[in-house]
Image 1: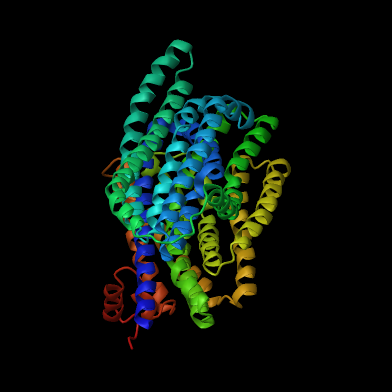
Image 2 (image 1 turned 135 degrees about the vertical axis):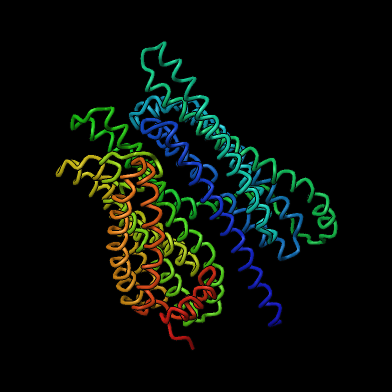
Length: 562
């Protein structure tokens, strides 16, 4: 009995880790292809692309985002009781729901594209990108149901591999189609007398075509796996002797009951982006800002700034996904010490990564923008410099959302997100109307939203499990180590850049100086962290290549081993 329980918990952790790893790989692929895509379509194209995506994301969330989780839960519950026939009925019912909800959302998006882009978000030329995205909702809805079915059977591999397949096709098609359609739009714009606008709009549509094709390829992959597995599952169904056969009406009702709480949580948490877009553009127009400037500012914020800060935040997201199963297991057996230890180690791990990323990007804001996007404008550097602190808050809030879900406090993140969203909008309006801070108002309001989420989630964790956050080693030591690193990074960058500028071009000089300063900065941070006793040997061993890091620390006399 004990060994069986251990094997089950071990399998849960392995499967969770597989999905987290695939999610991280998919994000890295997404981040890598975003760099050439952003450069091809330019700041205006980035505005059109992100505007279309924000509308698409909301309708995707409402129509089908929570279906995979619901299907996974319902299938798992029935398979564990030997009810294979009912599990299959859940799949068929969910597919019907996916086709209905996804199909309806796709039609609303396609035929309402002009209204959403022109009236709601004041970005009429994003209509092309939005119409290309419209069919994707239906594809993603069906894809999500099949992924959820496999997850319910206890295997994450189909979901994991299909995510990577989807993202690879997305990357290749997005860049190629953006390049081709950018040229096509340029020719159309030359005829219509607006070459810059139309080339950017068609380039953005090419970028969204990759999302569509990627989802189709992901669906074909899991569809092939399902058809291959279907005969095996049907043989298992024939051995199912259970008499309780659920009606499709009952299944639909249970699906909806399961979906709604998750739907509310994800929708509220993701509403801030589209609200920011609408509020910023409407208020900026009222304040008399030039429409061209508004479009460029939003393009930089949504597609450059957010792309960069999502790199460290994605680690927090993967960490949240991987730590939930073990946290849930500890909470289920009422092991309070294990629950608190898990929460503490997860938060410390994230803060050790988030602080140096925030400080490093703040110090190297302009060099990083030049290196990744060939953008030397003060606006792009200022946005990244001012918003780098959001990395800490978003990493913490993303992780704490997962921690609360791990201890079955599903409503807490929803309630906290609603409060944070209301305060976020108030701050955004204050900064725009009261201080005329243009795009910087959105940057600071976003950081404020994540900060409020951190605070509220911390109170929820304390109330739920009595967890009190340790301050010195979790926050102050990483902050001090990051400050030391920041000074060293700044000096190294300036020195290398000055030396190289005399012999190579500015672009090569900046790239080399940035990469050298980042490498030396990582080493400096690691040494500072160990000298300040920010990590123990056990904690260091949990990092990737932990044993190698421990041996290095020992040889450098930075850590006294047990």
